[in-house]
Length: 488
Ligand code: GLU
Image 1 (cartoon, rainbow, N blue to C red):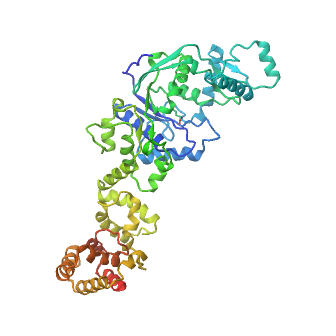
Image 2: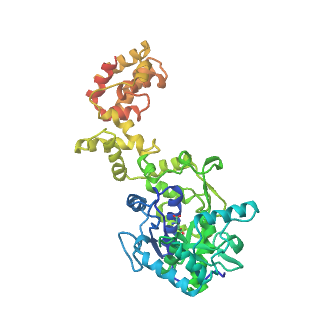
Image 3: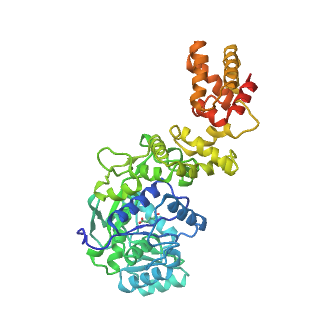
C-alpha cells in the first residue's frame, strides 16, 4: 500500500476503550495524538470505544474525559464538545455498524458463521496438535442453503465474519516502514457477535473512515489488528490513497525491561495526580517515551512539544519507564511555577491533608512559606508535612526527633538560643541567623550541623524541615521562643 497523499487535512484520533482508568500507556498515545494534531494545525478527535458494555462503565468513561482535561489535552471533536462526525461514543453508533455489516454480507465480503464455541475450540485443538497457526478454518464460507436452514432449525444464531482473501497485506507504517502480514496468519474474523453487537475491528475501522481520520497513532500492541482494519476499509470501498496512515508507537516497558506494572509505572493518572505530579511534568515525561526533542533535551513545555513534535522523531525501539526521571522532571516543573500558580497547586494538598482549612490568613502565610520549599520538593504531596509546623497549635515533636535533642549539648544550644533570640530587636531570617551564628558557632565553637539541628527540631518538630531561619521568621518570634522553651 503506498503512503497516501499527504496534503489532506490532518485528523488524528485518540480512541480508548475505558475498561479501567487510563494509564501511562494510554496517555502516552493520547499525548502523541494531540501533539501531532497541534503541530500540524489539524484536528484532535476523542472517541470513546465502548462497545464492550460489560467492561466499559460510565464511570470509566467520565474518568477518561476528566484525565484528558486535567492533562490539558483539549480535543476539537468528541464527548462534551460534539463535532460534525458524531456521536463520538461508539455505543451511540450501533446502527451505523449494523448497516455496514449488512452491506458487507450483501457484497460477499462477509458471511454468516454458525459455528458454536465448542466447534471452534475443537478446530483450535486440532490446529494445536498439528502445529498449525490457530484461527478460523473457513468452515462456514460456502454453506449450502440446506445447511443454513439446518443450522437455523437448530436455533443457532450466526456471527458475521469477514472473509480474508488469500494473499498478504502490506502497509507503510510511518515509524516502522513497510509491514507485511501474510493472510494465512490473519484468518477470517468476526465483525458482529451472535447478539448483534459489533466487535472492535468493525467499529474502529468504520469510524476511522466516517470520521475522516487521516493518521492513526497508537500503541504497537495494535499493530497486528491493522490488516483486518485495512480489509474493512477495502470492503467499505475506500480508495487506498484515502486510507488513514498508521504510526505504531513503541511499547513502554517498566524499569529493568520488566513489563510495565503497578509498581513499575503502569498506574492510573489519578494516582499521579494525587501523589502530587503536575500535568505538565507527566506530559513532558511521557513525551520522552519514544520521542525526543533532539539535542539531548529533556525539558519541554507543552507549547514546545507542539512546536517540535513530528512522527519522524518517534523511534521504534521500546521505551523504558523511569520513575526517577519523572520525579526529577516534576521537581523542575514545580520550580518553574510562578508563586501564584504554585499556591493554587499547593492549596488542595494542604487542605486535604488537614494542614489548613483555607482561611485568608492561612493562605497568606502559605504564600510566604512556599518560596522556601519550592527548590526542595519533587512532588506536591510533600508540602503539607513541610509546612505543618506553621499551622499546628498543639505542638508535638516527632519522637525520633525528640530523642535527638535530649542530650546536654542540645539543651545548652536551646537555652543560649532562647536567651539571645529574646533580645532580638528585629525578627527576620538575617537577624536570626546572625545572632545564632555568633552565639553558637563563633562563641561556643559548635559545628553548624550540630548547633542548628537541635533548633530545627525544637521549632519545626522534625529534623527535616524547610530552611531553619526562614522557618523561624515565618513562625514569628513568640511561637518560636515558646517552642524552644517547651523543648527545654
Ligand atoms: N480502543 C482501542 C483500545 O483502547 C484502541 C483503538 C485504536 O487506537 O485503534 O485498545
